[in-house]
Image (cartoon, rainbow, N blue to C red):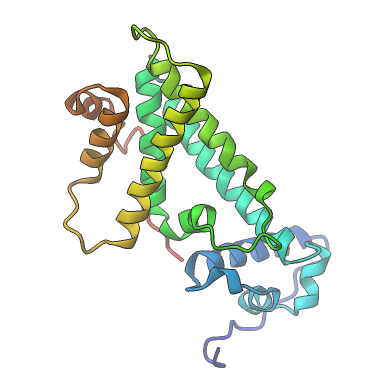
Length: 230
């Protein structure tokens, strides 16, 4: 990185404002993880340079790079879970709940491609980010499994718990594939995103896509997220 690219020296926080520095370190790490061509190469020195502090300043808040990255992951998972829960909080029935959750997931992933890659890109080595750091991601999947199973209640043949899990897993796989391909191949003449969401959910619920489309929350009511600004 050239001298022109380095951040300007950071002014020391007043006494008692250590949490300000911690927030700045987290924001810097999140930015770098979402924008680096190879996020797995992130170092504490890069984070310190981004904020404008000495690398040693980080250790009063995080013992190592792994702890800092896991903190970023937890915040991003909490953000996505909160948006999905908010989208579905007033759902009058299970199908609307499912549609709202899935729409919020896809819209966040497309609106925040860098942060989505941080969570689901799978490029971090295990010694830096252990599988346990993605526990909140498993909770997101469980919410989709539960919502899909509830939407399927009343069918003539009730699926077993294992079948419900597999159905939810396949739905999440499809949602992830849609977000990833949409983000990585923007040159494809994609149909409108909401049409893709409706068609995908139609395949997994056996409900007409036109019906699903009428249930999609509008951005005025749904927590749509602006694209990455970093």
